Image 1 (cartoon, rainbow, N blue to C red):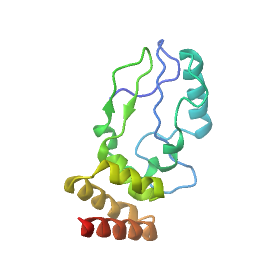
Image 2: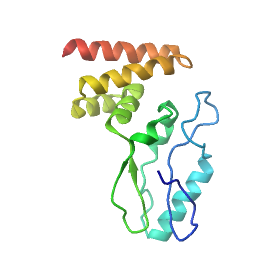
Image 3: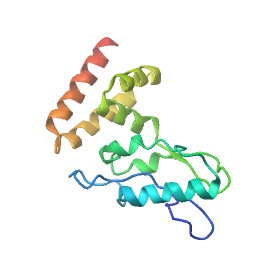
Image 4: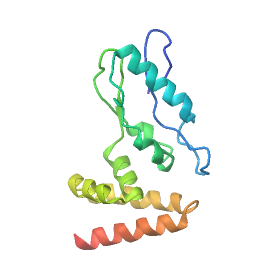
Length: 151
């Protein structure tokens, strides 16, 4: 995997994973402070002539719940000029959606039509999350149990 660099060697890349400093779960990657990330995003937008808001930053709120090996599952899109984009795997997106459980996340989960293997992956991650957030982990277990029972 290639890592993010800020305007070095003629390439602009942004590595989105960051760990909120107020959270105690182990970071899955080298943490990037929010202000550093914002600067990188602005640099890329300027260099590539992208409009403001070109990058959806809401995912940053939950990246700390990703398992340590999530980068092994990243999906790489073809480059857009010098802009390189990596997407989370379906499993990791599903994990984040089950963690958030907002109404729009539940709709997204329905649209994803998760497989039994994908649900098992999420269930396995709940144990790790429970070490830091037992109440949230229980909510996730309850959600998964209800989802599976509905068939």
